[in-house]
Image (tube, rainbow, N blue to C red; front, side, top):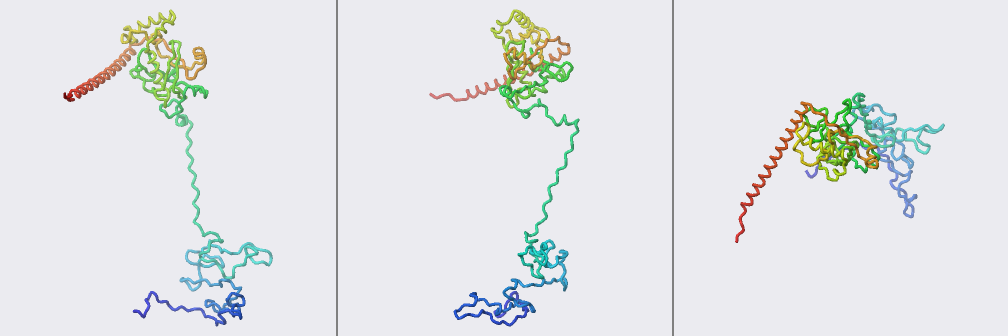
Length: 425
């Protein structure tokens, strides 16, 4: 076991090429101890041939190439050289294993002048005969072959064009759309600065002559629950459009002036992010009309206006149809100033009237118009009575609920106070 080597370490005998007889392995040394060329290497005359040089090869000299010409290795497929499977044809003078795309690094270049060999430049030696590229040679002396570049991205298909009949419906957003996401909200000062001209919502303007758009029907003697939209049924209170913006662009506040009332009406936005809405305008008008008339305002009124106030005061508190009746307080209210013109007539942009009343053109100031109260039909009387009954029932339920809550709170507080122990002496 110790005298024999393992089978894996066995080196099979290899037939070496024939060697020439060495003449002198060392360079001749002079008397000074150095060789003639001061290098110590054998000269071309005395150098031994390489043991790997093939038989019949010319002797190696100092100007011989660094690598002698080598024959291409054979393959296991046939005794003669042939292209390897999957490689196709080869370039003449190339190694059989070289990929067809790998051209020789020092292949033939452009032709030179007459009598000059084919080479890349006049200063480059030609490749020795029989030398081809190796299987690892990059094409053209550059980088190794890369993979195919990624194809350019395909263009997105063109979107089908929308028919013109649908473009007006889906390509535009209503300027009076509800919500805080459509358009900016400007202050009156900013409106003046940018010279904007706010446009009123069609729902707030005067009723059209031919029913071109919806409008609000409302007797300002009654609460806003009696407001109706012209397109709604007679028994339904106004709901659609209450949260729509009152102007475009939206504003944080506006002012209403009228020939029928002594002072302007201030309207502020309940939500500054959404701006003044149609509901804010109607609620502000209702709050103003139900306010008390001051003694100073009554004193400055003319005699004709005082007679109108007196007649309206007694009529609005009577049992006649279309008036609140005895539920009103026994004092002059601002809607008594209106006389018989208690119907909401819409708001309009009237720059001339604003200049006359305010002394100049102010931003976000509109005119409030009123209309004569018309006699109600039997159907309108019944519908109004039904709406008033529903409003009264809701109000009474809320009052009973608030009373029950306050009563339960007071009873619980009394129980807690009675259960607490008294102070000891």
